[in-house]
Length: 486
Image (tube, rainbow, N blue to C red; front, top):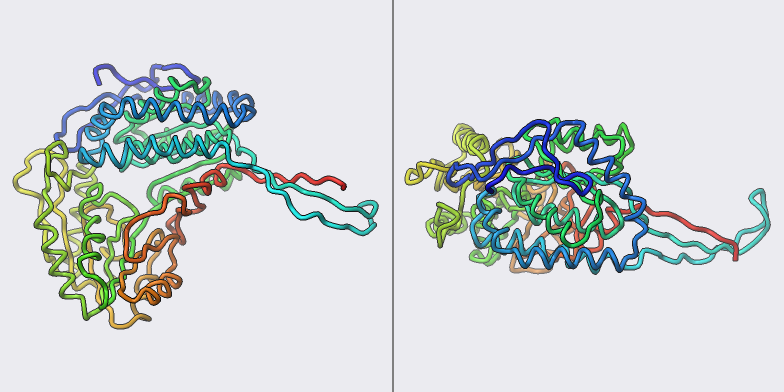
């Protein structure tokens, strides 16, 4: 980035009232670029621009919306390499992750919701025969349930994936005819401005997409409490989500919340240990543990417990920690110095609580720059430990033993969170039986894989609502009933 970034409001690139702040490369601590600091008035102006654009955009044909979303995907694919380099620089993701799981997924999501714009929005309901009464004559009444756009949507996105997460909000929202104000995470917002450029080149009308940023919480607060905002889609911590929900409640604003997670991986004695270890190992490697869907809380039956600890410890020896730009790096840095300190404080807390450190636990000595945390494995944990109960959001794994199925399910469910849990067992019937008892929005059976048409969201404090696939189109729409006499 050679020039300070400007805000994107009403189709124009606007100088920020609050100046700029530095975006740092988590691997090198060098400045990647200068992000704009919006004022409260500028955030409100973005919301107003989205409000002004809504009437026209919501009435465009589905085919036109699909054409623009497809064209945006074309731009993202054309610019995939520079986009991936920027994503790697500002998020600390490895080269493969930035290319394959960030930029490529963003392009795929715009493609998916180009098709989504063409999905039927009307559902015919069975006719109803009404007898004569106070409401009028006897008759047969037909009805339609029709999905309509909500209006202006604020999309507040997380720092762990500056491409796929915003695309997963913006694309379905636009497909349904909404307009958006995007407020990216302050740590890596520059990629979202490239997404705005791609959408502008694709032909998105002025005001349909707006991007505002800032290092101050006031920017996010304004993006939520603006009177022109009708829905907030948020990905982030449960604590922030709760504060957003309070503001939305006062204004009766719709919400879609993907919040924290502390995924339980229930591993039974008859499980394929190598398969379980490969899946659980993503806790360490994928985004350096900064992912709410990671199986960070292993609940292992005693017959496989020691073997699992041994294999997980061995798994760590094959994971290169280092510069995400270097070939062979598996684990890059966490997003910031403050977050590194937070993760390390949990590692120290785990030791004080009596968890047994099996591997890791110290800052990598060979890396004198960057925000690195050694992947850490704790054994002999109990469910009352804070390292077991609280989301650490880093490459830290805790293992809790259990005896029988009933105890394992109880331990897994003894959590404030319920985003995605996992079950590994050679007995598929048992695995599905256990999955049905887990209080989580999703359950992986002998896999960490996802079906990208399946609903995604959490139970308990892990969120409100569902998205992904057609469920995202539903999330960014209101249902309207139309009734007529037959």
